[in-house]
Length: 265
Image (cartoon, rainbow, N blue to C red; front, side, top):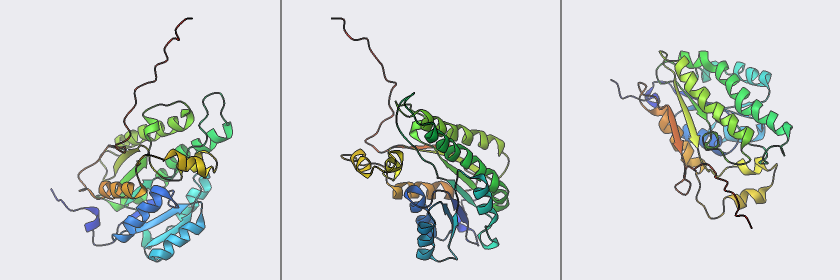
């Protein structure tokens, strides 16, 4: 069997990244752009996307404004991909968010809706829209979906966010079955505690809470994830990493919470 990777192709492979304006997405975009890939960088904050394109040149990075909560926005962005950025070799479904951390029933239904539309519907719509392009890419094509440890290990206040990420994991394994026999690999990537804008977004802009959350720990960094995604996308085409769970060494999988009766007085 050949040990050649996607990066050995005679023409530059293309990665399509959702949520490329910060965190995992921005770091991964830079990693791939520096190493010979073309990057389709998508997200809602067009200024950040344009800055990324200016950093590497419009022939390397294609910035596309796209809102994962808006189906028409996703379809328009995909339709706008020019021939020189086709076919897409790797889809990095990175865009997602958590909003709020209150336990049931003290939750905001508006937050639920945004999480479901972004983490579930946006991911599925993007995947469906790019399947033909990925199939055209042939051997080595891959879909990498970002789930979360919250989708595997429940915790108080995780409710809809954790459930949406559990969907991402199971959708990935189902998609792997559906695409069996094709050249497309599918990976469920499950990160644990990572230092991004995650907590700032979750707390609706509380930067102090974001800083406090990471005090005294060394979490996963965006550059760490970029290295992982590079590895997954570039393993030999006959291999598929089904599930990749990553945690910082300071974090361990938790056991279910046990509530004991209080001593009678």
